[in-house]
Image: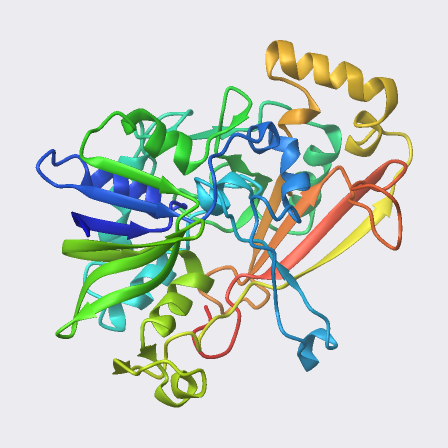
Length: 393
């Protein structure tokens, strides 16, 4: 059995950061396990290519919800990255920190060290904000955060409409306040996706004390005398046990971290017994408090303006491909929901509870072929920032 000081399960948005930080100590050995493969698919790195990642099993777990009355018994897709970088390699690249109230609430619940004032230095340390650093923003960190390199008249029209409706124009929703309308910041550098794998793993791959194992599916946490002592994982047809001398860190995401705990015998005892899993610790809350930010999307046809839908067809597509290949500019740098709106639905609320995404594009729907709708389109999506229910918000 190979042994390490730390074993990190999941090379996603958190796992890549942890592997980087823990391996700074050259005397500490770190094993990073990732169920997916390397981030070699070129569509991962071209921003507009994220539309192709939404339902691609080679890089996406392609989870779905169970049918529920609230969704009219539909199954709702839950994309989760299965590749180095995790969901930061397949998402829309929008850089949105949590609200200060979120972290302060966690601290008030007894989670020491998680207040906004306490986590802000870590945000700043990890960030390289291209506009420059200030009281809230970081400069010189690993994760590059940029403004969109391309604009569009419809994006400015969206922000102006928000102002006309009485909301402030907000150029930095990750700064002093979140509320308002503006343009999203993105995890890109020079027009390419900048995932946590690129930011935190690529620069430190040569560290001799860091082992990165891809296509390594964690099966359970090994427990010895009530302590997490290692991880059992599978690579192809081979089962491997790895020992952790200090800590096992689960960074497998909101879906699979609790799943792995349950597979390891930690969770609701009665549920574990029904699946034939030996109960190590009865913790009824494990896997029971997942809440997602459901959103509704509405699209419209527009006149008198060209949108992304036309720019990615025919000869325009060829022109845009050349522009991107030569200069990293053009519509290939666009991502999900380019303009934003963070609003309060009631004046007495302390922070925004609704988030808007706006884009000068519309994906296909209603039986249309391909991934984008035909003709000039725009799209507006709105979702709950603080979903109600146990664990919500």
